[in-house]
Image (cartoon, rainbow, N blue to C red; front, side, top):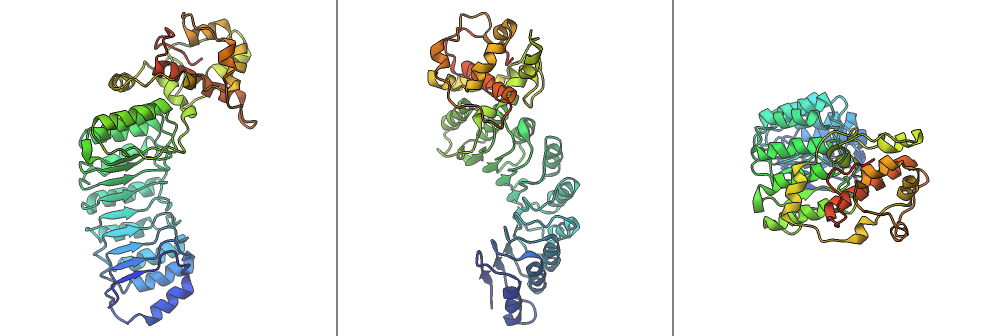
Length: 411
């Protein structure tokens, strides 16, 4: 009897599946493991596969990720899977099947209470459709261990709903939420849930590409670090997390005795775009530029709102108390030419707001060490804002002895 069939990445299309159906024996199949990921199933392949799945009631694992399945093909597959009640792994990742299939997927999930792995990231189940699927998983799949909801349009509001719905899932070890819109507030919500005991067996958390800044990163890192050595991997790449924050997280994990690669690769992280954190945590007074043309540069950019929106978070103090970053004057000088161009047109008041009453002087040698030029397709005001934020963050992070207080203003 055919128990396992693995045809991953073989260019399999509808004609091949039609031939397979012809050679398979009639009646219920003994098939338990089917792997057809990275093929070209599209609409017709999905429909043919659905007819095969109707005769496979013993199926436990099916992997179809990245097989170019359409919504119509997805309907055929999910309809076929309704014949199964023994599924443990359902991997539909990165197939555009969401349109019109939310109830079909819900029926499959409800009929398979032993499901341990569900991957529907990038399938088009978004908004209320995702909430519907989350409700079914939370109430019908208590053995779930690996859940992938990446690229599902989850934002800072919907993440709270999703977490509340998924509270019963105490067996989760791997949670993937990459390519959503969580931002720092969403990261904080996840951190709070973890600190309150949610997902007690969590070992892997993927939050790549979520517009998370330094404060959110520190918050989530402290939450998973509270789990100790049992936690194995935190993915935060493709966000906007400052270099010093990355160093702090690595130091925190090392202090807790966690595995050396607990923080995943950060090659695509953009540390210079960490604007929202400075806006929220370091801006404490509004500076009125003497030149009206400076108004846009002084506060129009960044995701975190205007000045006066908050005091410095204790998360920064806690992190730096654990390990002071080694001083690195070259890092604070990593400023773009646009920063100095903008500083020349800033008012005296704006300069004082940035540098306080200290004796800091912007000398020619520091100006000469600026590196990347402003990209031609990026507004000067946006580039200037990023550079100013980087300077203020780095002065605070590295404590270079300039006498600048925590009340530094980004303006």
